[in-house]
Image 1 (tube, protein in one colour):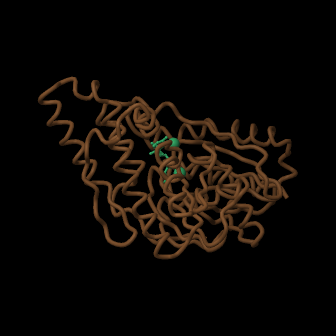
Image 2 (cartoon, rainbow, N blue to C red):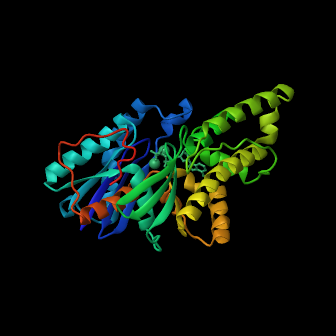
Image 3 (cartoon, rainbow, N blue to C red):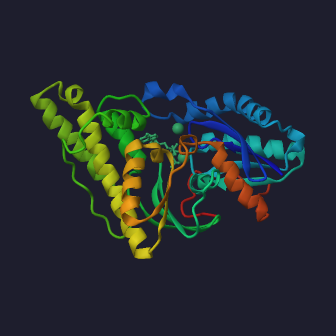
Amino acid sequence: MNILAIESSCDETSAAVISNGKIYSNIVAGQLIHERFGGVVPELASRAHQQHILPVVENALEKAKVTKNQLNAIAFTRGPGLLGSLLVGTSFAKAMALGLNIPLIEVNHIQAHVLAHFIDEPAPAFPFLCLTVSGGHTQIVLVRSHLDMEVIGETQDDAVGEAFDKTAKLLGLPYPGGPLVDKYAQQGNPEAFEFPLSEMPKYNFSFSGIKTSILYFLKANQAKNPNFIEENMADICASVQHALIKMLLQKLRKAARELNIKEVAIAGGVSANSGLRKALQELGEKERWKVYIPQFQYCTDNAGMIAMAAHFKYLKGEFTSQEVSPLPRMDGKYS
Ligand code: ATP
Ligand code: MG
Ligand code: FE
């Protein structure tokens, strides 16, 4: 059973082939064009998807040594994401499925970030908690089975990936800044500066306050020393990252203790962060958790995770009609 999966929700055009639950290819084309604008420009993103999608799909099929005629279904990201970007992948998938006369499978991008854990062994045992941390989402998800997930806590404002990217922007680093903050943080002192941690009820998060406090902190220090940022880059990055990770892990620990769950995973682009990976391992040892961290290529956006989600939907016979259109927002609509 072969499924071709397509991901185009933001600024990565990606295609993957999964056969009987095993990924045979996962091709990702990024879009460097956005760097000079300091963020993703939706109109440019959809045009770049149009340019990339055919070569990326051909490449994925070739690498997997699967021909179009051997495909049993086409999967695509229906949402959430940028409408123009989603439209490219959705239209391509619909046209290809229609042409080959095979079924279509729609995938929720955020659910797929969680299901990336089933690409490699060992996979978490149910029920497990997944801290999903990405450019647009920050959630604690209770995962009861492959397709039964409940968001038990989430950010009330910015996503933690946004907090990383906005910090980077304030520091004059290019977009997307998250990985750069990570890189500088590795050389810095996480206790050099202190930032206030937000207190939210239950398992919820807030990251807009820390962003404002970083802004004022930088302004005040730059007024005294115009070279403050350059001279303290590593310590600032390490301290901000430390505060962000602390907020994430406090809530994750609270949820795991209260629900008495010992299987704990992280997913999404920010799960590539080396400080978070390390801090989670350490906390996991203290709490006696089994910790699951995805391979780097399956943390940020990729079609491999879309293919994995599609595999489970295929087994359950969950197909989509040709009438389907993309959904830029589909919060809470898991399954
Ligand atoms: P969503 O999945 O919510 O729709 P998205 O698809 O844009 O959003 P991802 O691709 O999953 O998000 O993740 C991108 C985010 O991950 C960006 O904010 C980026 O800065 C952040 N990120 C990637 N690598 C790292 C890292 N090493 N440290 C911190 N942040 C990182
Ligand atoms: Mg991206
Ligand atoms: Fe994503």
